[in-house]
Amino acid sequence: MNFADLGLSDELLKAVVDSGYTTPTPIQEQAIPQVHMMRDIIAIAQTGTGKTASFVLPMIDILANGRRRALMPRSLILEPTRELAAQVAENFEKYGKNHNLKMALLIGGVQMGDQVKALTEGVDVLIATPGRLMDLFERGKILLTGCSMLVIDEADRMLDMGFIPDIENICTKLPTARQTLLFSATMPPPIKKLADRFLTNPKYIEVARPASANVNIAQFKVAVPARKKRDVLRQLLKSEDVQTGIIFCNRKTTVREINKSLNSYGFSSGEIHGDMDQSARIAELQRFKDGKINILVASDVAARGLDVKGVSHVFNFDTPWHPDDYVHRIGRTGRAGALGRAFTFVAPEDAEAIQNVEKLTGGEIPVYDAQVGEDVAVAEAKPPREKRERGGRAERPSREERVAEEKPKAESKKVETRHAEPRAERAPRREVRAEEPRRERSQHRSEQDGPDEGWNGPVPGFLSVSALA
Image (cartoon, rainbow, N blue to C red; front, side):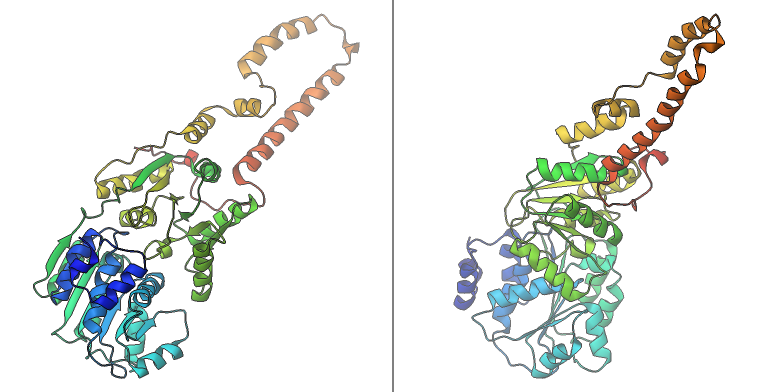
């Protein structure tokens, strides 16, 4: 089957072909005809399956007929994050270039004046985050009574971010006679309840098992103590020959620290997190898309909706706290049929988190057993004196060995005279014992932290009594 078999208009087909696509994905193949038939749909699809185009394409054809009215958008698309909203807007611009449709993007972090101006002139498609939409609605800058189509995208993410009450409020302000499309990677009970309340006889479409991971992504978990994560990350970035990669962290402070660390070691990396304003985040994403940097360190703000062609690797520097986030994080690679690789660092304190991930995805993630993983495991298993020996320093004898060696010497000293300068003999030993621990600590810091780095991570593994399952 190709796009021409889905009943799309010639103008739309030309835009699709110009974008380099000829064959629809399974979600597009099933959803587009149903949307054309004006049916409500519930679509369960994993990230990276092309679900955005499955509602953008038919919406363009449906909205081709009709006229715009001031402050009354004809259709509404709700997105959980600014990045995903911007991504959908890009899709409308790309596929709607042969149609006379106007679009407005309502997201936080940008000037409200331009958005109000666009609404005043009338728009066919309004793409919004719930917070900014409700803000403008309460100011009387927008009317929703003329909206005949509603798309709720990434519904499970909306639930995670606490947007469900806002969505329910928005739905009550829309016309009852409308078409509603709900897309989600999973179907938890609150989303099922939302669908039952606001959708009418929906067509249920599922193209993959809920919360399953893309089969095009090779997944691995790397057992590593928290204090060794940076070392392992740098080794993997080199050994895996990462062309374009995204590193996800649970905390914004960790994002900043890891980006600083990678830069100090000569990697071309950037960062994106919630503390950055919208213009800075857009600029950093553009640098990543343009290839000016090939590694992006991100918090979960970028886990959904970030569509960058050719992302070869995803690294979960922290095992995600919420299992659903795992699916969306690794979904940044292996998109549109390409192959990808995903590595998740699992410290001892992450045992429960990784078990929840594997329970959600329905299978155990294989342990990464390449050479870099073996080296770290061996290094952690050996005592400190053997680490020093590998670094070129002589192995220090054990306490038992030293006692055995010194016992005969002690017996012989009983017959020696006091003028044998015992103070001169003892002084060098005190100097050695005083300096060796300092050298050991100094070396441990340089191996662990790298240049100009401090510690701000989770509780070290040696303080945890839990064991990785």
